[in-house]
Image 1: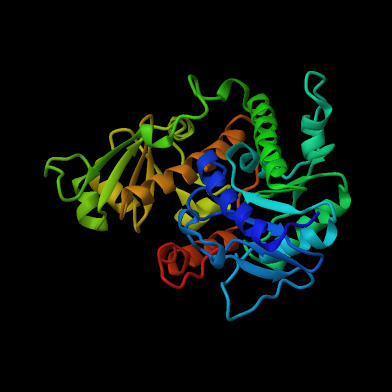
Image 2: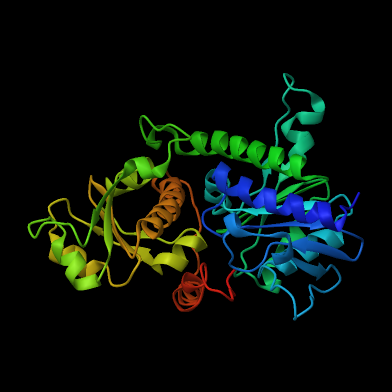
Length: 372
């Protein structure tokens, strides 16, 4: 049953806030939509902060071809993805596209995962009821492209009972009859993904890791206007022009720093922020080495056994970078544990990074946003 346009606007705004609160996305990444008829859906706008959205900011998009009224709000660049799902699946009245950590890490494997039965749950609320028999992974496509939309549609055609699809190196798309149903499914997907992930990495899983701890708890900030000249990373401020640095020891970042190797971009969020890879310096590296390794803002470098150093224009930007780096290190740990995750292709890494640096990173607070 499609939503009325008024209810759709209300539910989509509420869903955007819930995505942030639940940690299923960072910043304005991800998107939300609701079907309002057999021909149209409402979707979040392009590159706008979810905290500031009003009903009139949401865009109306045609299911048939992803077109919209150019005089109104600009829809998310993933409008074609949502249109493809609504066109294919009549049981989809609400869709969320998430960048949730464990599911995104598993997406790098390019596999299809079976959903187990759970005899202890109400059948209507079981993982299989919420997710379907399988969770397939769609082939890679650049963010916002028709190729990505077509790849997700193909995965759903091959798995007609599935209600969630992993998008390789990117995230997940989850469909359902209602706002409430898709969020239950999103959390069921993350629970299942964590179980599978822990089995795959085994003893390499970070000791003492606890879900739900805000990453900011693992960050020690220093600001350019108050740091002392003998601060260990003084030259990072001088050379990069950063307003803030953050020494970060979050569980998966710290774990990957132990290996002392550069970490390539396994998820395209990481490619957007850092390009092809994040370098790793030896434990005793000094500020000049770090300053040379961090060439643009925001930027980061791993330091063996210590975690990461992030340089950024603001604490918010540093925290967003760490969210993405932590997720990317989760995927990298799959490789370290003997699995075979696939990195984002070299050409795609460059394209994603150029798009972010030139456009998206400047749009979150812009008066006329044009981001994802």
